[in-house]
Image (cartoon, rainbow, N blue to C red; front, top):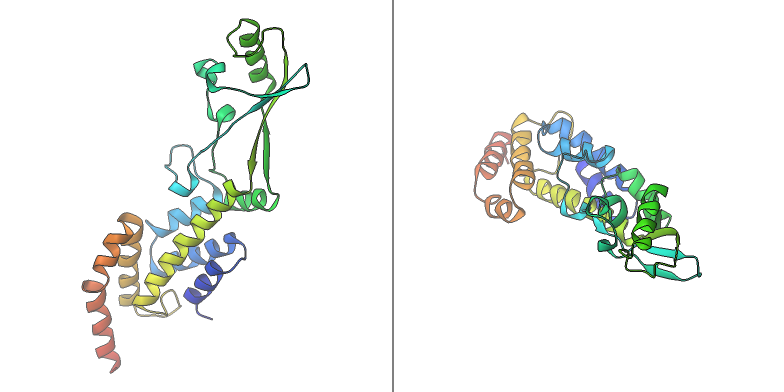
Length: 228
């Protein structure tokens, strides 16, 4: 089965997303999309560095932490219950920048429970004692946790599937054998234009250009050379 068809079938199926990305890595190398498609694939496989903007499907998820108190009750912890310097992602947001294999594992496990560090808990109890924590100062918090269900991770997996599928379907419209060994370089040039539209421009711009630009002209020339 052609590489492009493998990507399409894997993207519409329910197999590992990491497999889709590895096939996309092969595609990126073969068509020479090392400045567009390849960086996306590598970041998805290895995780996003702190200084790189993440796609919308990987945006941080707000957390609603709950505290357990000495009287046995559980109460939500307000963001303003902590000093400004502690209203950080570790306490109130979850950064979904992990490698895709980690995301897949968290989705398969049904989610994750996050616990505050001992230092953060001490800061929170200090605020409570001073009447700044929004909780009865006579109470002591023994732990703060926040739950994230599988949906927070399944949306990342769906985002990768959809992007890979969009790309593969657009490339299929250019030439089904894109990414195969030995295809004419002109096909790879046309494929790189499609990739550029998707990764450097919007999908709407891509759709407006696929039918009547260089891509079409290149393919027409190839058809004439092959006698079709």
